Length: 310
Image (tube, rainbow, N blue to C red):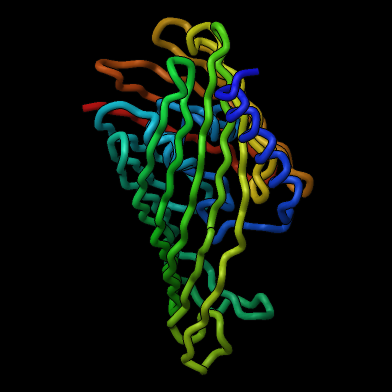
């Protein structure tokens, strides 16, 4: 094996070792990531897999190292129907080396309970984050590349009489090497490294009435993925392992301008979810995405996304 191919293989090994030692109990902060909504409808159609996919702006929200693998200026936006909420809106906007991402969700008339579970009021809930993404890629001759990226996130959580604000850093890497007509890629992402949340409002996390700000350090989470690319990107196989989101596996097949996707997501203490998705290539690199996800514990989830290149 050449030295260049060894780089990609080493990334896959690092991913496996790091994930084996990560905490199963690690959770991302907030509602959006815990429901595994993310940014990419394409990824959702593949069961949530896709950390190692390149050349797609929508993946930059999952792995910041995907951004420098894209070409030109682009905008990816999507909407998700989420049970008991007003839905979720996301977008990623950027070029090869720098971009921004936005993710928001809101719910009205949320029941507020005390420590005993008794309903003491009704209010609105909003959550979101804004991220600045940057990265750089290095070619491995004409057969592959290594890409690195980072995402600095500003976090916000707004509840009746309780608000939280925070900052978190995500870093990621993707390596790809083509052997003949087969492309192999591996990715690794470290999230909330570091990450911190402040609750300055009275009664948020401190004991009621203290008026003191509470500072919470977020658990570091690890994620990694591998992918195999066949027939000039007409067939993709992807597998992700995430310390907080579980195991995701998916497949994408492309015929002319139509892409068909399917995948599953599983974790030991959570029900299995199943996804179907489709993508339609439009003019000048634009793409329309749709995904449907079957969830055992709540109603089915539908997502639609649009990629535009300028």
